[in-house]
Image (cartoon, rainbow, N blue to C red; front, side):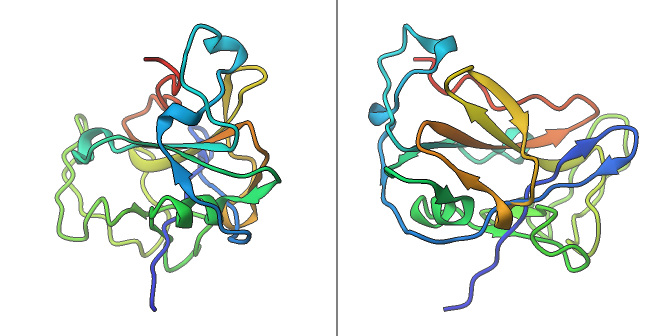
Length: 184
């Protein structure tokens, strides 16, 4: 079976965008958001996840928010989390999975993106995505409740039970982490 994977971007507003992400191994199964453990910042939440929480925010791309828990009791590669949640990632021709170009096929190759302050463009996935329209990749430690950019590419990223993986389509110069995943 052939499959395309898109890689998350690490934004650097002064130097450009780069992102690295994790490989696949140890398949796990997703569960509903009812299985997520609250982080320190979300102590009042009743949502619990003993494994890895996944959140994908498509923002202006228009697809529904994806929120799911992937069960695991051991460290798990990010690509395995995505596989278990049936989320596809596509990288670029020049950077492979080090730069996320599409998540679940979005933005589509024939989709004209209109981002305020910029001319419309279509993402070709040939090279680095523009700083005003790209996928950012985040990791949250539930111990602190803080989201940080992923420090490695998606195919090098390994997550521990109790961590969260987030993708946000960034449209503009302000890159926000995923919404609070444990908010009811």
